[in-house]
Image (cartoon, rainbow, N blue to C red; front, side, top):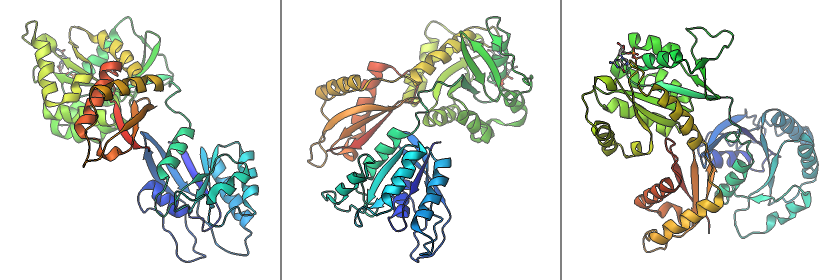
Length: 432
Ligand code: GDP
């Protein structure tokens, strides 16, 4: 995760801002001058992005230590560790003589930074204008005490974080998950045996290595925890498996999850639980119904199987379903094709102009319902992340957008852009 560090003079409100952004009271705001604090870390999630916020604290408010020295220490430390620095100043005090020197130091660091003017408790106040003098970009007025503008600050922060979504990693990480004996290891072995696949020759890769790399149509794939797969059926019993750390770790370590179920047993609650874990973790998802060779079927069996599942869990309508036999090899390579397709859906970015076109036509077709007599207006939208995709929609009253209306928008965006196999998130944000 990217790291964002707060720096600034004592008493400008860094700890309070830290608490405000982290949303919990993890930092200790010291009442007593001279109290040494450790550095505090807090994880912040905003618009589908996460980062670590670091309060460099550790300050001793000792008048014999020159302010510049203290701040310099913080900044130097933060430059080494952080991807973005927030230079917090006190709008009530105004521009402090040392501020210009800190800005020079920040500029010299080559790290991106934001100038945050704290203690602007009244959003109408123009106190912070004098920070323009520092020539450090637009100062962002906030009030850590009452939360004014903290959303805007978080927007500014997340826009400046290194974009992990853009760079396509060398290899796509795939986890094959599912209950014991559904055929996961047979499936992976089958893939390795297909002549179209080249098992990548990586030094140190043995049959027992945790991850199995392979290449498919020019794309490097890594099947994660395949050694665990081989062992797992001997260790885990069915119920235990789903809550097991192993499964969670496989999901955590993967981009795309292939959830395998046994056609002869059908979809069980445990399968749904694990699917939901993967989906909520933001992974791409593919449903594979294996042992299809054992299933007595007519032309409608597959559709019926799928339909029953979707009735129980509606989001399963948005993921690909493949009916395979690891024994005969039927549609096993189809799974590989689908993995590559789902990856591109998962990473897909819709230009803002198109998001807004779609939003406009959806709103035209069906207006958001009023909430408590108040009009609910949706102003514009933009895709804020990919992998997994998140669309933020800005409006006057984000908390009042009815659940069913968000679902309507969700289905509308799905109908337009697919995102098949990718968990699409729609978040409502405030804008007047
Ligand atoms: P895992 O625990 O999910 O890795 O499952 P395994 O790959 O060990 O398979 C469990 C059993 O199901 C083994 O006896 C396999 O031979 C058998 N099996 C796996 N896939 C299929 C399939 O598609 N069709 C049939 N008929 N049997 C299968």
